[in-house]
Image (cartoon, rainbow, N blue to C red; front, side):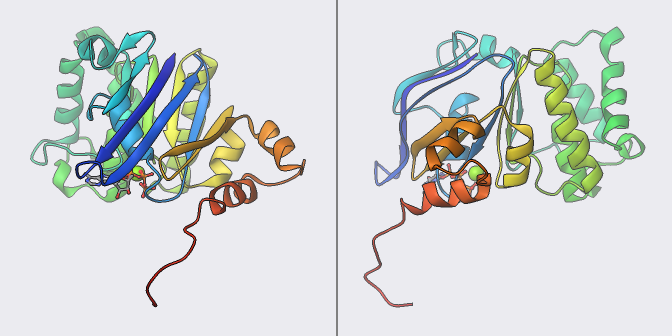
Length: 251
Ligand SMILES: Nc1ncnc2c1ncn2[C@@H]1O[C@H](COP(=O)(O)OP(=O)(O)OP(=O)(O)O)[C@@H](O)[C@H]1O
Ligand SMILES: [Mg+2]
């Protein structure tokens, strides 16, 4: 459902190699967790998948559609929750969600989904409030609801759990699981190891722009030689091996 073919991206005229020769595939119906230390390249990867950033080389397809060649066709089947959602601040929550429904050409008889999702994520009472008055968690919920309105085949979320209260976080995890059980595909980045451990069919670990591993947790455990190792421990072992040799300055 999602394919990366030797994708690379650098910033600052090649001085920062954010993503290096990334190749991987995510099957349809899969719940895929993307992990990596700060600055590893997760957001850069996600922005390339959603067509916001152009890879320097390589290509990405969503259900066989090249995101650069046919962006509109690909975006029709993608839902996206960015790491820092941006809204029209002066709109009310309901106006923003109706606008998103307009963009995706959702017919009036199917718009009750907005209220169902708002109820599910406990944002219904705030829908008539202006977005600039929303708390961090409320904004996050708004972004999540907006991404789900058109029932996308592929849901891509960049650290969606940050800022959510325990109930909303539980509801989101429940939603992601049921989404995949219906045959849809979820790709999300997270720093919360417990979430990835409990929820994901497969995890990918990226470090310094390179994919270090992409496998089910059971396989990562087998490779690490410890059948009961936590994902946290495996993550630290795999990413620690990439650490800088040392610094030429004193702190
Ligand atoms: N707009 C930019 N200009 C220059 N360098 C950038 C830019 N965006 C990201 N980078 C660099 O690219 C690398 C990867 O950043 P990216 O945001 O993809 O990491 P990340 O894995 O999402 O990190 P985090 O866990 O902190 O969100 C980092 O070295 C970062 O400093
Ligand atoms: Mg990021």
